[in-house]
Length: 175
Image (cartoon, rainbow, N blue to C red; front, side):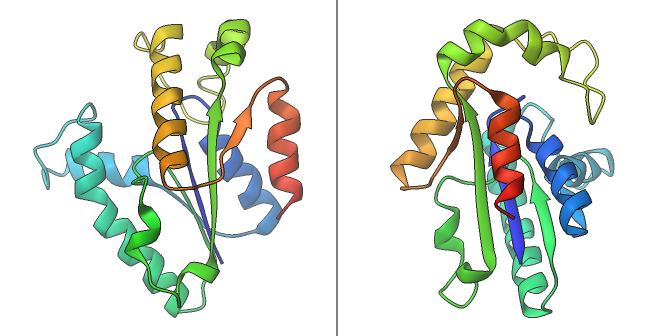
């Protein structure tokens, strides 16, 4: 089984992947690590801020890794924001039953009421430095874009509305 986790920034994609690694004992791949490896090795001129272009660049690699893992009957957790909204079009009917998709997003109200908490947990799993781009406005815009994009393609979204811990626990319990 492939567990494909995506969503908006600061929603806990990496935390969920870590918790599922601990529960399921599946290997875990961070698309962010792959992105930075490609950037730092000089294999792309894209930067960490070229999100839309990075999705176009990196998704074909991730897609083929997913296909290979399924063909080899291997389990894998893949986590990151570089998953296109229409990701299902990348796979035919023999692959899709082996992929569990999870998209995390927060409501405007949750962000507004919990911004300090969100910001305080930004480095729980991986260090994010000063993270000056993480503002209420930026989080709201990113979450709205993720929700609209995946809803347009009829994807189910795990919406964090009131209780973050409960939402994550319910997701983990369903695996």
